[in-house]
Amino acid sequence: MTILDERGGPARITLTEVAHHAGVSRSTVSLVLRGSPLVAAETRERVQAAIAALGYVYNRGAATLRAARTDTVGLLVCEINNSFYGELTAGVDDVLGEQGVVAFLANTAESGERQDRYLQRMREQNVDGVIICPAAGTSPALLDRLRQWQLPVVQALRFLSAREGDYAGVDYEFGMEMVTEHLLRIGHRRIAFVGGNLSHSAFAGRRVGFAAALRRHGLTPDLVVRCPATRRGGLDAVGPLMDLADPPTAMLCYNDLVAFGVMLGLEARGLRAGRDIAVTGFDDLTEAAISRPALTTVATSARQIGQEAARLLLRRIADPQGAPERVILPARLVIRESCGALRVQPDKHQ
Image: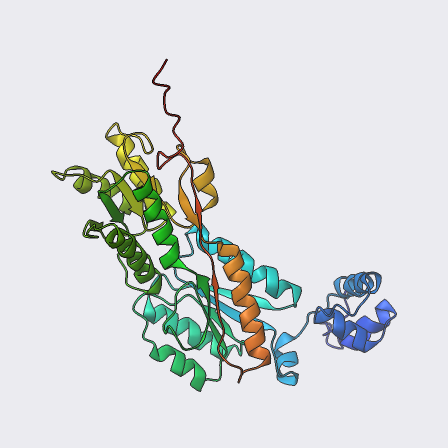
């Protein structure tokens, strides 16, 4: 159906006309447009059918001027091509979607300049708050600026201050201690830490855990190769490590992507993870369980971190002056084939 104005052009359909067409009140149509759970499913469907039939377009900008909140938030991640951030985003959406809140996703690509530009644009769009995984090198002063803007913010995965602001993440330090101790228990003493060429809290936590475990056993944590946290980075790191006079017997990787690259690099040399050298990852991406060999790693529950970050932000929006909250999820060691611990030892009596 097309309604024309007096000049023959399409007329702007009003909320009242949608209500009349659907046989409901104007306030009911408004509730449906805002995604309110107060409307019965049958009534919602009738209103939505009327909207489609009349071609009504919701003027969200005008509605924003009438409301204190926009029911939108910003979500800034630093590496959108990493499936870990896809899981994080899905977790954020799990929680926000239930509340009728929409997240605007932006990829900073580890650029502070891009991050500042996106934050400014989100502020201009009057988002209710932001969830941010800070780009490497971001100054803690960013938290002060967001406070000056009166823009609620939750830090996710990485934090700019260990004490200030809301944060949702995982215990990186303990997770790395666990996997290092595991390698030590199964006999490794020459363990390399591979990956991570950017400085931020998530990298620092991993390095601290690695060093703490080795020092408890009287070992020096000096075998460290910093490289991009990518498959390519892991692949390129294998040659220099294996060409050492005393090469490592285990490669403990910054994340699963680096570990996948390391396993490819070993394969190119005729070596196999779990048989000739131990390899471990960090994050437990879906691919870790189905790689060949299956990857020993540390599960960090990206989706759950996203859910917790979204809940934190909703609480902060509702109570801007409340005490800062920090949600630190436990890391979990997942032992599979790539570390060699699951290899069946031959019976010496056969």
